[in-house]
Length: 371
Image 1 (spheres, rainbow, N blue to C red):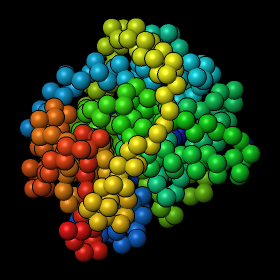
Image 2: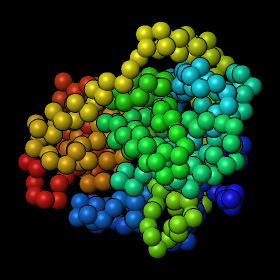
Image 3: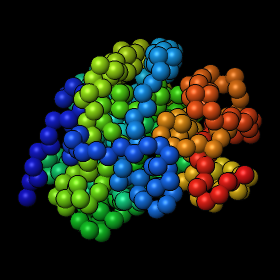
């Protein structure tokens, strides 16, 4: 039976993405950072509540715009390379399923690259995946029923230690058991510093400007929510649509700015994709090995309290209670916003030159000081 059509949601153009999410914008879900941290470490699942959205300072917003100007071409090349690899591996009978919410702008960029450079228009949806709960199977079933002749290509913004790539692989295996349909768990990302996937634009741990902000660069959509009293058995996972932030929204500005570089980088993207395929780049999961070393070094039992890479460290500073931030160098140009946020929240920064990532966020344990 065909499922009901999704409701319009988010601030992106309808041609860019369709959100397969239940709109919870009238539900009070936000919890203070301190209370939320205590609840998460006390056993409440993070998907049952939302962090209070960080309202960026003028200085921080200036840094976003400066970073976007400096890195737009680099982000375009990463998106173009990932797009080239998708078409070479999967063909053009593909639906893009980006993982809300960091995956959404990445999926839009990949879709736009293929449209601009090759005239190919792939359907693009944004769906929920939640660590410890899995992927939204209702969203997957909707895509498969709506595009019965297409394969699904999952998309995210970046990898950290690969937790979501692992959740995705487990979810696809579970889906096959339940529905007797095989899904390809390949995850295409713009940046893969943890070496967790084989479809990526770059493995450099650089700042993708969309990591700087929350909903205001992700279509005004919150993190996704899964709570029994709000999400029924036939519902998509939920999220809030922060329409009240429309005056501060830079979601379209980000994808428009990056997309303008696609004609100029198309040839380089093809060459880079050729190179990835010729050397048969594999996922080595080197990032996971590094995390285990850091756990031992700092006496951290819970791997979920270690968040490596620029994107994940940014998230720690925006919505968790950090213990300390490790950086490879204070002069790393990718870390300006990290140092600004750390100073703003009075979080200590330690230089750790042996890091394979640019930085790593350590979250304070509520079970006594990790020190």
